[in-house]
Figure 1 (cartoon, one colour):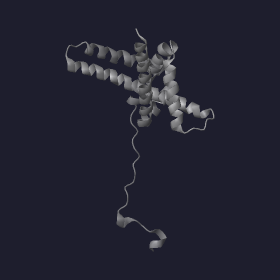
Figure 2 (spheres, rainbow, N blue to C red; figure 1 turned 180 degrees about the horizontal axis):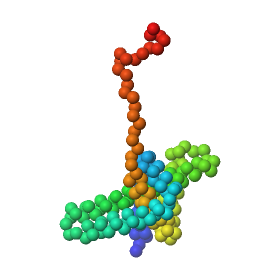
Figure 3 (cartoon, helix red, strand yellow; figure 1 turned 90 degrees about the vertical axis):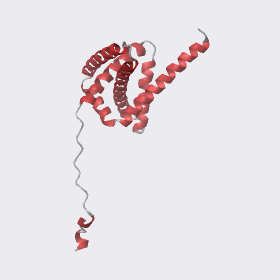
Length: 181
């Protein structure tokens, strides 16, 4: 193994961490309602989220492994899609964890915009996962399983019905109040 190989591995880890952080941040920004539901699930029952995450990972992972063992190429794509769904669920849960951390950053007296709080929280979240030994084998798996369970809860929750808005009056129906009399 040469120094070039070592630098390539380090670059791959840094690039993967950056991409994961960007994905977590974007999921949180693009899906605020689902992220909020996942955050509420984690805040209310983190142990239940962990258990659901284990269950979802075992079931979907088993199905993905069985499908992936197929010799048919297009069927193997389905296995990759299932692993992608697991990764997106972990990203949604990670966005919820980062949202919680961002709120706590704001509560300690820092005067930052909410986006800056969330960005710093994502950086701390990804950095904690990169910590040797504890981050690799405790923080990342626990956060991923809690996140998958919270995402399962958020995705299964019924969507809120939008409020009914009164239709806009037609042009001739607009009253002028006292001025029109």
